[in-house]
Picture 1: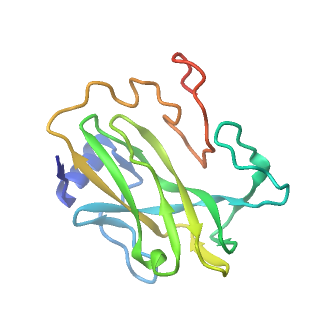
Picture 2: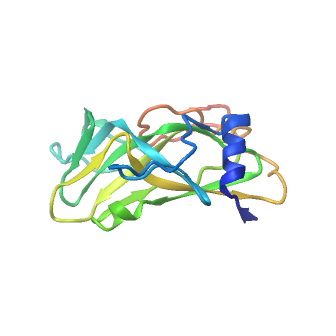
Picture 3: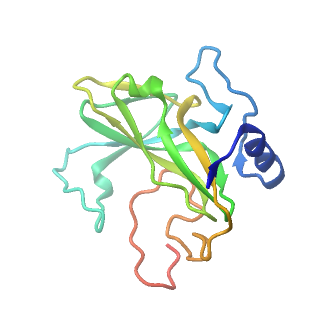
Length: 192
């Protein structure tokens, strides 16, 4: 398994629409960088956010998630409360090839400010906007900027395609658009 370079990412984005919209060059002028880099793609943060709040003393339960634990917000700048987090999504829509696994790392600009981006791997055959969890580990409010870079995606190509892709399993987050809260799959036929 090897990490794929810029020319491979560009080709897949153009021919197979692996990333849409796709920025062919790394944009850096006055913004937190986004676009194609040497061995990855720096995705942008979209404008919709769900800010965690504990107003209702909710228990965070992935099996019975209470949407009241979040406040919806749309804007160019989101302020994350101290020691809290937001859910957001990438502006880009990804279509992952059947022989590729994608890992995501937060951008160093935000990491140096105490903001941590968490995303699970994008599995072979998965597609959608990526839901991001952005944690503010500081005791101060922190800003994130829509339309600018938030995380880098690295594409790892396997020696062959896997036997069962995320799409073939009818994964519960397949085709997601917008910020997507935790879900449980109830049975094998449900494609939640």
